[in-house]
Length: 305
Image (tube, rainbow, N blue to C red; front, side):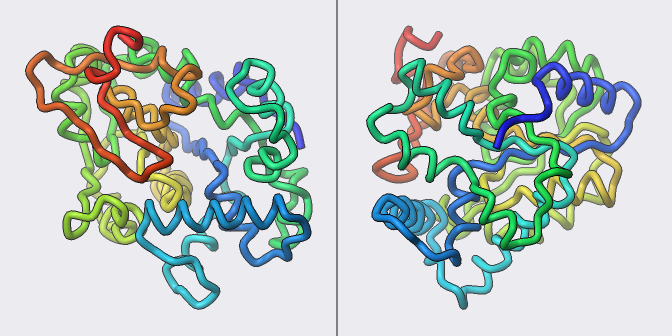
């Protein structure tokens, strides 16, 4: 599977949606979402079994949920991913081309190429199983949110101008405490803050979708940025289809704007997005799990300034 939408075409579409207040959704489907879809398919190789075991462990650690065929929360999540594929305007997916490019740059290990492709890249069997017509998909880069046009906050500011925007995230306080964010967007942002349920950061997105959805009627801006993890991709499409918004899945770019490296293993890909926290602001050091550490920019030192 290869992209059929270039970065330039996607940027023009987003630019037009913002300028003309027309509906649009840009969704990104990562390895976690792909494994949720593959869960009920038959594993054929040892690599597939290992990939699935890793994905299920990741889900349990991050979302505090066990994926089983009778877990209603997980089944609802999977259906949301399927609906996302069927109704999004632009869908960012890891393609074989993208993975090979990342390997060539040394960001992924070539020795595990087949396993890596199996983890990140959806195969035709998955789409056929769920009745998803890939010929109708506008497939673009899953990393576009971290590219220079959207990911660098000064460039994003030029894109939206002085228009109000809404950001749905758990990073509200860190963004408010970030000097560069405040200079560029601070006076034009409305926040919907995804709070940690019962103090548990792992449950935030899965269990708060209905709560976030209840605030859609209060959103005044046309542009809405999402950072709710894999559990809320379908909410972007709801905002586009039901409310006419330009909904952009920004993901961990919002962490970077808050001065936080939430994907250390791929930080070299998107370190240009990072901003420096306000001097004296509380240092953020959230550990989601042993394999996916979130580290404050200040602790990483001058390398990422």
